[in-house]
Length: 315
Ligand code: MEV
Image (tube, rainbow, N blue to C red; front, side, top):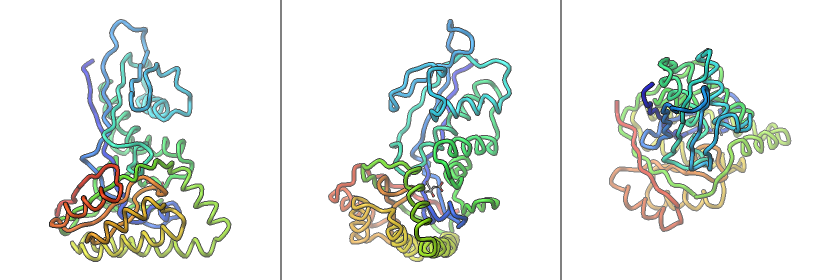
């Protein structure tokens, strides 16, 4: 069998994280320059069915059997092999490398699963269709996160901008203009499972207050996705900043995020907010192209650990 290399992109939520768990829509885009790569090579001379996993960033160099059952890579491999209905496991080495940090709002857990499902299925000569890869990643998200909406696996699997609402068909969106973004890392790692669970607890304690904020976030997603479609940078930026206000009210921001978001706005961003699970991880700012270097510098001066730029092209 030949060596196979597959990958999956990171993702950015422009509007609606957390509220999407409670049935509101959310707007997400692929972050295609940042990827998790999975390569599979035959393991010649090893016992049949042995799969060795090498993922230095996760401190792993181990046979599949030695991973605990709840390990994400073990889950991703097991579910992919089940979907392939193989009578015998392939004998191979699976290597995993990420260009972006884990547990920081960019969708690493869904991207790992999708890269693995694509690589192992191609290695055995039966590349799984996108719907199946997406379904496998939703299962691993459930195992890792408890109550995921499904937005991360969906935007990463399809690698297209979309509005996602739990239980409804995905709506792909075509940008009406080019949108430029700066993404900055606070350097603080935070588990999405934890922030989702915290909000669930907060909602139990204050159901009316939390639900009214969740509804307001959902309304902003409507405004923001129309702005994306019509190419209105200013309206999308305003919706992002308003969304940040609501996320802050729900306790999902952090001092590090607030600092970077405020600096980005002071330096001329059209809008800025946290992206993903919050309380750490990354922030995202929508910017005019001419202001990119000024805002990047302001973010670095304010303590951003890594800065990326990305853009959504007019279709
Ligand atoms: C995480 O990227 C997005 C959240 O809304 C969780 C989810 O939708 O599963 C925080």
